[in-house]
Amino acid sequence: METSQDSLFEQAMARYQAGAAAEEVLPDFARIVEAAPRQSAGWTCLAWLQLLCDQPEEALRSARFAVRLNGQDPQARINLSLALLETQSKGVRDHIQVVQQVMTLAPEVSGELKESIADGLERKPGWKALEKVKAWLEL
Image 1: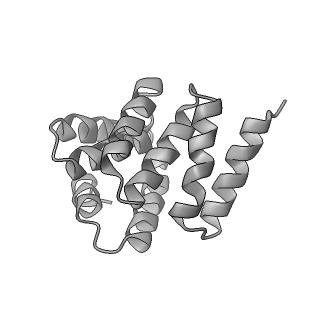
Image 2: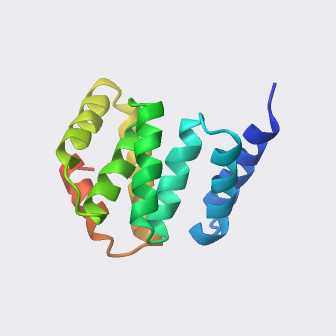
């Protein structure tokens, strides 16, 4: 059975994928994680949007929480790596290595990550941290 939180998540994702600005969708994801704090996908999306909106400190908190909830989610690890780079914090290599391991074990994930990185570079051209992560992952 679909909950209203699932529906709100799907609606917010659809708006983002249809081209809505990160600033427009960010409050929706803030509400989603507030109402369902154990939903790792919500935290992962919130961190991504915070990164796009130049909120690296907030993104670092959100991404850490997403990884704590689901350490196998490569997008959560990428977001955490980006937030660590943006805040000039240590620990990036460990997260990149986990993403590389996941990509080796589940090659189908590479396509999704490639799309996500392309989306990030389109929405935020010249994003140095994302360009670094892309090069490290060889996507």
